[in-house]
Image 1: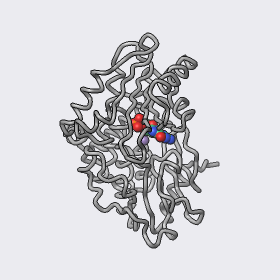
Image 2: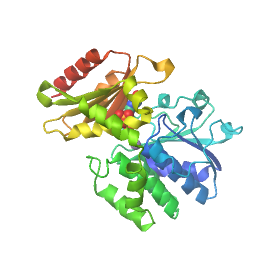
Image 3: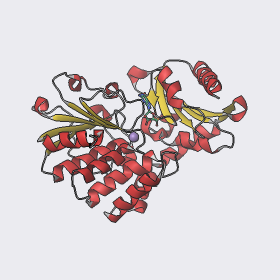
Length: 328
Ligand code: 5GP
Ligand code: MN
């Protein structure tokens, strides 16, 4: 007896659909955008009428992803929305999509993701936490659907792969991630070119913001927690936007003895004044940071998670300290 997998089910849904709308989570990162574009190119190659959607609030996109050919992305719902199959990519729960029109019961949703805490909000779900990135699931689907991996597809999917694996350094980096990389390179993706675009073409203000974060770094509990924070002034004085702190938390991982790295930053939008966004990274896998984030209204992966809170800095650090302590 053959077993029908989630991959087969989702492949069937995509095969049967004529018109689709693809979208991803708010504040899209490299995996969100790479998966979105990769899936769009696959479906277009198969002759589908596929459209990409991102809310207007997501623009401008993070600086390092602006080179991606995403100019066809819609910011308004299409008129024929109800006739389109809606495909969510890299989105752990539907609340991470701040657009109400997609929460309509008449819409059929396919949910493709690798977050272990995915709420399986789709009518059909392909949720595989063993996948290094959502782009890996798109890559598997592309092969399942018989698509030819073109260079633009490979370049988009490689962005998801290289960002979500921390440049092939996180624990989600297995043989499959490298096999996928090899396949994408054979299809024309250049690791060096993607690296130059995504990691080495950043505005100088990011270095200034990083400098401020590192100048203020501190350790708690004998070094188990390495943390720092950025204020509104840090952003304003360096001319930075919210995305410019991307990657800073990863620098905190490097200090010996660090179990959890924490970056706290004050949010900039007027209507979010007083709120702080917290990024958590688990260095050696002893602590499940997604559990801590979920307890504070956020979520994420075992080793990379985040949440937004109204708690003042000392209280929130204390909360994180206690929870890390409980898990150790
Ligand atoms: P970052 O710290 O880079 O913003 O986020 C790391 C990971 O945590 C993301 O890939 C995402 O999975 C998750 N994450 C961050 N913030 C939130 C949040 O507010 N809610 C949920 N559900 N997940 C989040
Ligand atoms: Mn992802």
